[in-house]
Length: 109
View 1 (cartoon, rainbow, N blue to C red):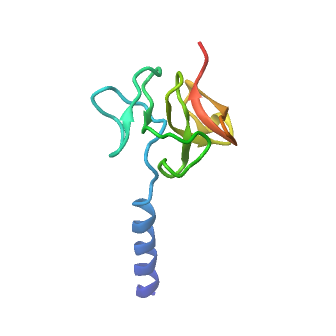
View 2 (view 1 turned 180 degrees about the vertical axis):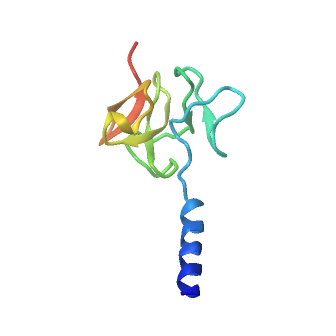
């Protein structure tokens, strides 16, 4: 019994430490993004992201994101989604360049 409880506790501790970076999260110029990400303040509410160069690929982006544009022509990592409810209320789940994968992007004004 004790061995089972310890194993369950260890599994829970490992699972809690594996959250993907908060790509697509709200932020400000002074913070709100996980380590290694920056805030694109051109997006309403900010958008945690990092620069990338190969649209449609995941190789340059953190887990759960791929390379595309958030706003304008610059390519950045965007949060992958299946449906609108996977995104913030001010974002839509839209198609991406060079991929059939969808991503959370700011809603059109």
